[in-house]
Image 1: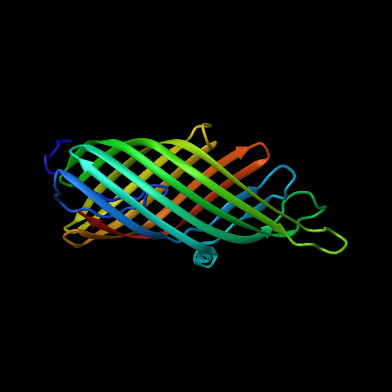
Image 2: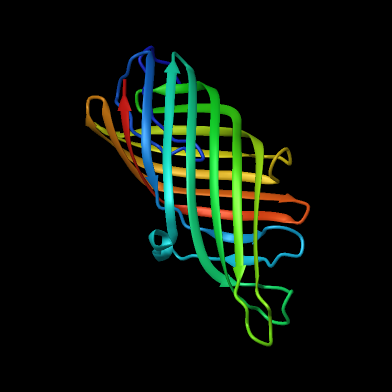
Length: 256
């Protein structure tokens, strides 16, 4: 598609990456910051270390807000010409009751698990195509993770004495990403984002999908609403964090 000197800019939060909105025309140099909220749920398996009980967690969408303990998210975006740069800080904590699917007990036991994730993402890329109604970017970079899992199995008299365990892990994943932005109507746009990474360098695999609808509230202020899904599968020794976090996302972008 034909490139334009004046292109559409977008704000996006990465692993966070929550999106923001964009105008129909923007300066050749853009900087934006996006605080956002993500009502993430939690699903998957947590095994803090070898011999510790594994808790399987599964949430329905209606449980998302009730199970979210705390969260803070903010991202930054910069573009100069066709060069794009993104950064994101994301931290959230969720908890859920479940059952142990395997020994140490003869039968499944009630248990509770808590997962806290913090990530810092840095990406750089290039706007490979643009038109008055759409843009497409390819990016690559790193995402640093700190994961903490806690498992608590209460005692059952005559059956199981109880157990409690905690484990944390830090690692860095290479990631590649693609982003597309579409103009829907004056003041309205849609953003689609996907990334994949890990490749065994940090986690086995991490992947993210994000979609938002964006509204230009004022000249330099944009509002966004959408949905985000993030998966990370980290295994080292007896430690396993195989977690899926999903939920609605709301953001506000301020352009400078």
